[in-house]
Image (cartoon, rainbow, N blue to C red; front, side, top):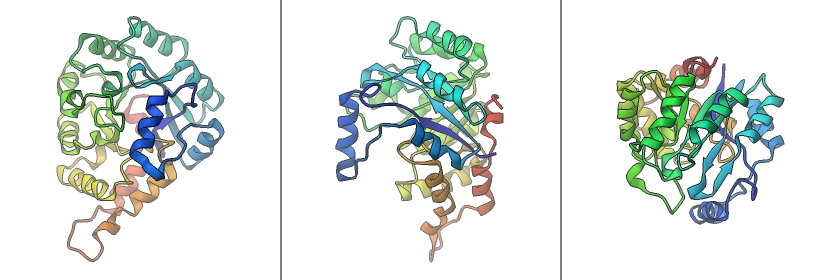
Length: 281
């Protein structure tokens, strides 16, 4: 079973603000491509995998507001392939009620959060109460705990090591750290080794090839390759591009004495049944 645990759908300008787009263009330079998502193009991209998780995203601070209803309507068209995750913003007073509606009313099956985007630290009560309710609903959490291209954000609240208290406080809440928590990849690796309810996805890493190679080597050396999940971060990359990059990662070590990732481990990562691990299989 090939599962992409990290894909986005959103439209510009309906769901993405001008500041978000401006920051994306600033870091991309001439390489910028339109990151608005036509649903037909998303559907075409996920044909490369058996199942795909589609993420809502609510982060008013950076101008991203993808309605949970939008995600729910799309995944309902293709229930055999797509799984919807909701998102709520801790800055909304009714965030917990929004989560209840998304799970019970819209039948979304997981939660996406991004403290750095939402400008709310994981230590704050308004953040933790959302995770408490997610645990009560028995749904998994995909959390962006790492850096971002957005400029008006605080890196002080972004280090994945800050997830350790949450992993202890909410032991029944299965969490996936997006993008291996980059650039704090080693912190993420020791976290997922220590806490059985934590995993990480490899989305949006391969286009920094040296970082990607070193991340997988470090995961191998820490013995946690089996806790890494396939993710693309569509539309920034596609599932097929991500799988191709995984299978090509050892080119970095050609004609050197550098370590190689076993092909068996690479194929296991691609074929890992993430839905079963997340409890939504």
